[in-house]
Amino acid sequence: MKITRLETLFVKPRWLFLKIHTDEGIVGLGEPIVEGRAQTVAAAVHEIGRYLIGQDPRRIEHHWQAIYRGQFYRGGPVLCSALSGIEHALWDITGKWLGQPVYNLLGGATRDRIRMYGWVHGSTYGDYIESAKVSAGAGFTALKFGLIGAVDIVDNLTVVEENVERFAQLRETVGKQVDIGIDFHGRVSPAMAVRLAKALEPYYPMFIEEPVLPENVDTMVTVARSTTIPIATGERLFTKWGFREVLEKQAAIILQPDLSHAGGILECKKIAAMAECYYAGIAPHCPLGPIALAACLQLDACIPNFLAQEHVTTGVGYLKEPFQIVDGYIPLPTKPGLGIELDEEALADKLDDGSWETPRLWHRDGSVADW
Image (cartoon, rainbow, N blue to C red):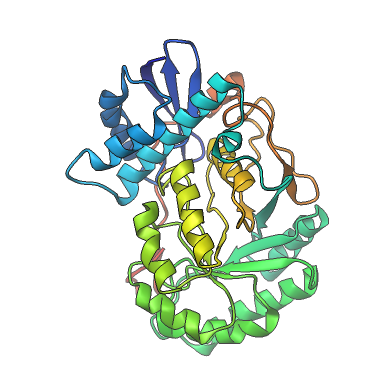
């Protein structure tokens, strides 16, 4: 079997889909994307495609090594995301060729269903409460929401109190049986992260995600040592090498590799194995489309230290058979490869030019804030 063509599709609202075609008619799906940089990643995919055309798609590890290590410059969000989406598609082809879901090729299932967590959205306290009620009523046992706006290096007491009050109201709404994570999104200085974590502790957060930016692991260690709340990070880390220091310094106990950024399915399984040595859990990051979610589910199915899976779509309007969430879980996928098929007719109305950009965030004085 040989690869004949790589096809990229810009898809609303901000996604990039990949199809890898073969001479045997098997087409693999992947989702290579950096949010706000779809056009850049698409260009990288096609540059890498010059190496892949004519290759056997089943030599996944070999191609991963050739793409990642075969050039002088390696790593980073663009190149790793292009590689990740390509890797998804190679696994999809291989699974379809063998008639097996990807997780069966990676050791088999370690669970019968996959726990999902949903986002709590809104612009007011009331919105957040209603969103949490809907999610809890649908059977979700885990939720997540983000901090309010930008946070200064040293900010006032109101910022702390508003965020804590919102968390307290959510906790009261959903009760003690539902886990609630809070995403600091790397917007917070170490000093403010420590203050916020201390104030949040009485309400038992499931985790604090990206309490500080991941560029300086020692600052995350400072926050982790200051609180009993588990620290989560990883959506902006790439490959096993990017996670090494986080684990060695025990800066986080929950890792959130993004399978569309960190190197793909097998690379994230390797990251999960590293995390297992440190008794750390895996909660894959996935604010992306249905192909990315399908790749995540294959990993979730076969690792022993899985915690919960983020999602923003079940694929309605994109997949012929969207994922079904039952009591907060998705049943184990059973179809070959990634287990999905695009709804080409519906997808035709969702094609875009890839020009979506991440909105910028500003401090009160007009200076740039970390998004």
